[in-house]
Figure 1 (spheres, rainbow, N blue to C red):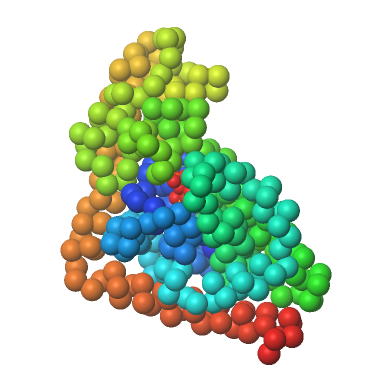
Figure 2 (cartoon, rainbow, N blue to C red; figure 1 turned 45 degrees about the vertical axis):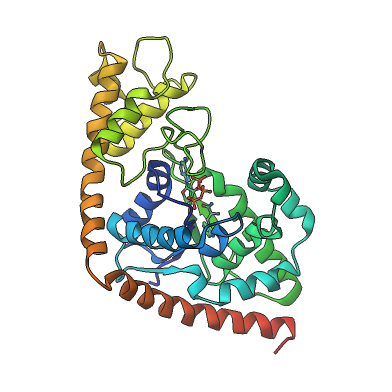
Length: 328
Ligand code: ATP
Ligand code: LTN
C-alpha cells in the first residue's frame, strides 16, 4: 500500500528551540518511516520580515543541519530549501488569484506579527499563508505535522484547495493538520503565558537546541514558577505545568509516575533534574550537528539531492495547475 504523504516547513529565523523540537521536529523524525515525507526550510517565508543577508544565509544552513542532526535522513525524507524549488513561489501567485483577502484578514498570526512591526509590514507577511498553502498543496500532502499555532494556516490551505478544486476541477489533495496531543504548545520559560518563541526578546525564554549545558541550567533556574509548593500537572499553574510537560515529553514517563517522583521535592529539585534531562536529550543531536557541519560539502550534497526530488514532483503538479487555469 502506498504511504500517505507528509509535508512540513520550518522558518530560518535564528536558532531552533525546544518548542520547535517537541512540537514539530521530534515527531517528524519519529514518523518518518511510516510516511512519504517532505520537510522544507521555508526561507521565502523567513524574508516576510526584514533579514540581514549574511545572517539569513547562515541561519538557513543551521536549520537544515539541525534537521539532519535531529534524525531526518535522506532515504526516508526529502529535506530541502524552499527557494531552491521555484514552483513554490509560482504556485503561490496562482493561488493568490483565487484567495479572498477576507480569509487572510482573519489570520491571527498576521495580526500578532503585524502589530509588533507596525509601520513596515510587508505585503509578503500578509500573503504568508498563501505561500504556505502552495508549499503544502504542491506535494499532494495528506498530513501536516505542526505545533498548535499553525492549525489555522493548515485549515486555510485546505479551504484554498477546496476552492480551487471547485472552480477548476480536482487537482489538490485536501490536507489535515497533525498536532501532537502533548507538546503542541511549549510555553516560554520566562513567560509561561506565551508560547516559547524564536522571536521573543527575552533570550532566557527559550532553550535553543545548540545551548551549552550551563546555558540550559541557567535558563531553567531562572524560569518563572509560582508561590505554591507541590509539584503537580495543574494547568492553572502555567510555569510548573510547562516544566513538567517538557519533562514528560523528554522522558516518556506517565504523568502519575512523574508526580510521584517529585512528591515532597522542591521546585529547585525539579529545575535541576529537568536541566539534566534536557542536556542529555540534546547531547546526541548536538554531537551529530557538529559532525555533519564539520564534514566539508555534506550538507550541500544532502540539500541538492532533496531539491532535485522535490523539484520533480512540484513541477509536475504546477503543470497540472497551469493547464486547469487555462494558461498553458
Ligand atoms: P517562533 O518560534 O519564532 O514563533 P514560528 O512558530 O513562527 O517560530 P517556525 O519556527 O518555523 O515558526 O515553526 C516551526 C514549527 O515549530 C511549527 O510547526 C510550529 O508550529 C512549531 N512551534 C513553534 N513554536 C512552538 C512551541 N512553542 N511549541 C510547540 N510547537 C512550536
Ligand atoms: N508557517 C509555518 C512554517 C511553514 C509551514 C509550511 C508549516 C511554512 N510552510 C507548510 C507546515 C507546512 C510556521 O511554522 N511558522
